[in-house]
Length: 220
Image (cartoon, rainbow, N blue to C red; front, side, top):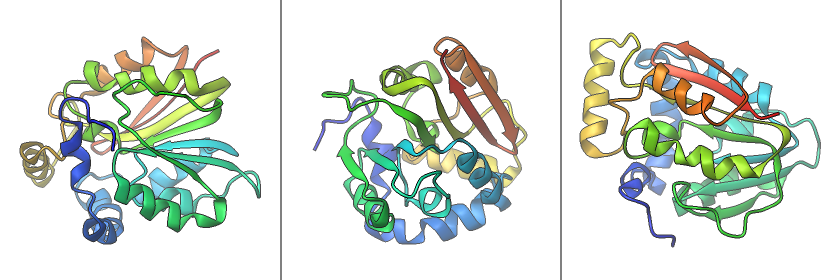
């Protein structure tokens, strides 16, 4: 198993087999709409819009979005990166029909033996689970950018901890998750995300829906 960088382990350790079985219900069906105020249908629309037939997914969760999206090819190239072995095996089984290639790694560490470039890279609900301020967690962008083919898109969504409108329930739940190390997003703002993308990509878009930033970025 790769050695986690800093406290990266805490943000992924919660994804046990038991919790993964409940994730779609608790997070995607209940929390997204009722607490973060960004319905999963909106996330799925964003995901499907940027998905290519040559795709890398990083921080794969349960594979819900991969499973529910239609690839523009019947035989896509699909790779899955995650530090959590349970998430990798759960997602790989869920999208077995797509014959994914999996790698267990910490995205805050340099990627050894990098694969051939991809036309899309998804980092859905990854950033708020990475440790430290945006300047630190944006190292993930630095490690992924070399894996983008010319004109390719990196996209995803992240729950912001500041600079967005949050209900009292959202504030309390975020504080709990941050105290447990599940989230590390207290200082994550739209401006911090924008700076991280601007410094690394020639084009980017950010849309705020509730507490969530949906973003995409690409280089020339």
